[in-house]
Image: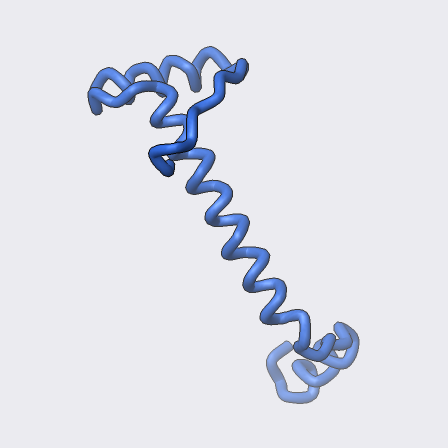
Length: 79
């Protein structure tokens, strides 16, 4: 986070088992619970960004006809 940005408070509801695990990790790593949750969300969003980029790159690929692929596999002895 950039120094000039301020954090915002939100209410998040967790399954009790997940909350217990987060609290234990917070204690074991000596990191604030909010830091762990923020990091997990950031990692999830980064993964989404990678997926979107992959979709954009593959958008120009030609579509494959399923029936044609299956027939070719059968012809080639793969099925």
